[in-house]
Image (cartoon, rainbow, N blue to C red):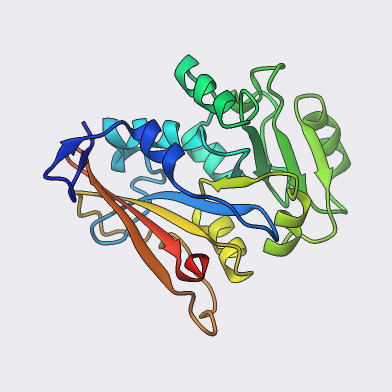
Length: 245
């Protein structure tokens, strides 16, 4: 159960909460992130994030997709989490229709190497073919194999600017990680919202932070916009401070 810590712990409807939040830019798509981490900052346990999840986190993970036009993730996340196609419940579809969105957000996978198995779960629904974003000069055999199960787009610039420019028809892009693709987007300043699930687990290990790389100069100021608690985890929403101006 989700509770609003600012309203004496009252239960909340997470879809109503998400659809009531503002996500809009005039110059480019709104770029939001959704990540889970342990209390000591770990983003993976035994190579994946599943051990950090609980029922509330999974529910919010699925609900957050309902407000996006595009669900974006890297190939490593597809492999490590055995991701399947994007699914929407009837209630999610109803709310999307009311908000002027298509029935199901588009799954977009970023990979420089095309190291994806055409038989992976993410390609299992021919009616919901994902899009693969990759660069030029890739292996032709891999390109041919993946083109049978996905729409492959080769773009010149695979940095944050190039990715968002290619997806410019979207209003909201939801990035689900992992840390590598997060870092590519954030390094280009393509960040408007970060949703973080704080899992009550001490993990240690060598997993990366939610993003990494050269320090941003200057750092991007974020404002804490929402605090919601589940039965175990804490859910935080940060919005880019400049979005308020």
